[in-house]
Amino acid sequence: MGKVCTLDEAAALVPDGALVGLGGGLTLREPAALVRMLVRAGRRDLHLVGGAHGYAVDLPCAAGCVRLVQHSYVGFEHDLGLAPHFRRLTQTRQIHVLEDDELVLYYKLQAAALGLTYLPLRRLDGSDTTRQHDYRQETCPYTGVPLTCVPALTPDVALIHANAADESGNLHIAVPVLLDAILAAASRTVIATCERLVSHRQLAALGATVPALEVACVVEAPWGAHPTACYPDYAYDREHLLDYLEGTSDREGAGLRQYLDHWVHGSATPKAYSAALDPKRCAVLRGWRRSKIDWRKVFEHAEN
Amino acid sequence: MPRIDEYGIDEFMAVAMAQCIRDGEVVFNGVSVALPLVAMLLAKATHAPRMVVIGGLQGAVNPRPPFLPPVGLDWTMLRGADAVVPTPQIFQWAMAGRLDLLYLGGGQLDQYGNTNNSLIRDPGREVKLPGGAGASSLSCYARRFVIWTTRHRSKGDRPLPRGHTFVPLVDWVTGVGHRTHDSTRTALGLQGRGPAWVVTNLGVFDFESSSGRMRFRQRFPDVTIDDVRASTGFEVVVDGAVEEVPAPTRAEISVLRRLDPLAVRRREFPSSELSRLFRRFS
Image 1 (cartoon, each protein chain N blue to C red):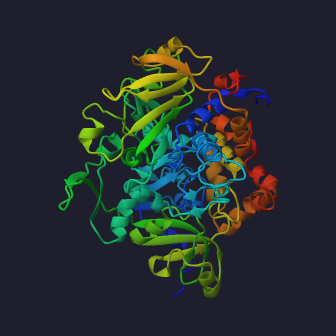
Image 2: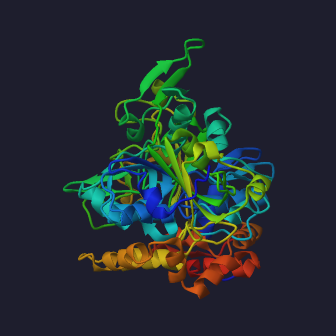
Image 3: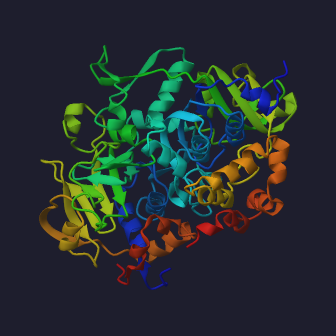
């Protein structure tokens, strides 16, 4: 019944070389604590798959955990720019990239969730992003409409950060759910963290976004999406991301080692990670809902 | 920041991008953030009140954000929305032909309206771009799309046409234009009609229907046809008079500043462009 476990116990469910699906996206609800867990456990040759991510892809790339990245976008948007380690390692071919389209990725997961081996979509063609996948081009047997068949994609493991969970593994995820629900339905094993464990009754009142039958285990990890946002609890930590991007970019890798020592190896439990955060900064990230002015403070460095 | 009686190229370009929207259309901001969103919310607040704004992959339908954040996924975009739909619903609308207009950016663009968000292949080195998000599918499905860039000018540090954002043919097609190296949109059997407009920091372009090539239509007042020729890596089609981009109204500029008080739109411009100021209003 009980599916509550520790990060170390969860890490044991992810073998080297696993096809790992990432929940959340960009600066929202990335499964950051779970990604740090894989880095800490020294996983190798991972095949990451997901929609659009920043930190959750760049960090494990930097730490040498990744063989292949199958994503629609990897970066930090106009706000903070390129994903430096992802870019460096792909350009030197230490990591392979298989760009996938966000919409197509969704239907590949949908096919897996349906127990199908492929799904037909309206005709997709002309782009190199599409053509590198060698999809079968077909026509509808009923109407002759041009279609494209995309194969099912079944991740070995999905990593998801939820707002709340109960002991049996029901997950509540606040909107926007992004691809998390379909990722959970498509994957063989779902590993979740949550901001807080709540009673079964409280979880039912919030609503289960991902039902327990799809979930293997859950770890209580407050700030488990940090430095990305987990609304309504906290907004994204722009300063932390800036420190990560600027502080880990030196050629010798000293900054990166320092970052990993402090935030990954030195903060091995959710409790230790929370304790390592600056309380003043946490208050700003949690204070977004007090007023529009407080909310703007989260982004204040964005002002020109 | 510009004063009250003047406006910047960021604001002028946002207004020009808003003009691509017709009232009643369902519009998605695609893979990029601030500038298309400013344009969409501006159009909704001015000439296109019946349009539907779909704000990002978070599925916010007609959002009324307190301010625009510098990132694509944030709860500010859910505020005041008529509905927040699951991300897959946007994909369903796209494939079912219900998206009328989409904005697509790109690190490299070409004369047929192909966008490259994936990989630049310079001799001797490759540059990995972040990726197209939904560009390769949505460019096939949306009824039409608008291409935009704030980086039309030549970089000047590399031989032509490699120094340009606009090249004859992109190194990697992410978003599909009217024609690729081996086929055309019609021959491919794609649902959407492809790119309709290109809005850059130099002017506004459409596409010649016979050839599918970009055609220069409007220039910003401080830009000449020669500037555009010198900044473009292919022969620019000019057919008839090139007019000035219509000046914004005072109302448009003030609405735009209210929508985007953090001026996140300015982050998308090279700093050298932000000194361009304009004083004439319609």
